[in-house]
Amino acid sequence: MTIVKRATKGSALTYSEMDENIRDLYEDTGIHRVLTNGSGANEQAHGTVIGKFIDIGGTPTRYSNYGPIVDIYRDINRANEFSNTTKLGGIAFSGRNEDDVKVSYASISTLIGSDADDGEHTGNRIVFSIADGTGGAAFDSYLNDSFSVGHTSVINASAAALQTTGAFASDTAEIQLGTSSNSQSIHATVMNSGLRPTGDFYLPTADAAKVLNIGGMGPVSSFGFTTTNKTTIEMLKYRGQHMIKAFSSSNIEFDLPICQNNSTLSTTTAGVGDMWQISNAGETGTTITIDRDGSGTAQAVYWVNGSSLVAFTNNPTIAFGGSLMIQAVYAGTYMIFNATGLTDA
Image 1 (cartoon, rainbow, N blue to C red):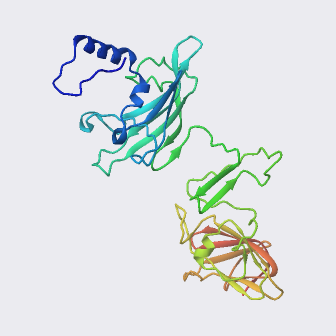
Image 2: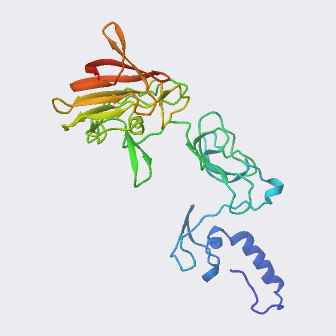
Image 3: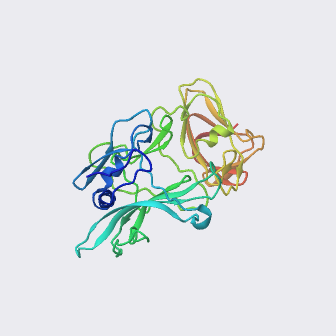
């Protein structure tokens, strides 16, 4: 049967009708009837129960622009109970283990953040966890954290960061940084097929920000293959890279940035250890001049020439076919190594 009600208020139900209504609520009202409750502006969701499965769906109406929504709402006075570590709700994925005990194998939960007023509230984080084999308890209560005991938080996401206790893996061997319309990619290797190298890549051990030395420029590097002068700010953008003057019949200048003992990576000054590999592959008779005073503050530059340490009184100048590696070694000081075609001009 279904729930019996009177169209006219004040018209009492019979005892038999009340008994049936109570029986119906107790025995026959399930998730399916709850999901399909309401119509028109009061319609909440359409659902279908097939065996042990629940399908939440239906045809969108003008009352909802976003389709079915699952809302896990903790309706408790914020001031009385909530704190920044209070769980708002969770989803548990449970099953039975070999001892026929119900346990949780994975879960998703979220925590409240700040206690600011409406419009300024923040979430703490959303956590995806998975059983790690350390001996989780039976999942036998919805009043404690047994749904996540013995779990490792594999993904911990907040508005500030995304963390994982495991490794980020990609079937495409690629990580994209930036926005969808303006991104850069880090690839595992240039070998897009076949057997990839198994060697790992390690960042340098350091207690401050560093720029990695990139061995090659890659295809179509507009800065690496340069025909124009470069300012100190432009030079700083390409620390650790190879720069080549090519396809040019004119002389060019690179302004040397001020070197400081920076504790963090600076966009205005170089730090000790920063280096550039510079080659002149232009035309016969052309030069690249490294302007020691290009920043407005002359930097000391030394050249290891054989067994002698030579200080530049003018500017390091690279002839056609020449190359060098210049590195910041101290505040206000650079050294040039492995130079060919170099003069003090």
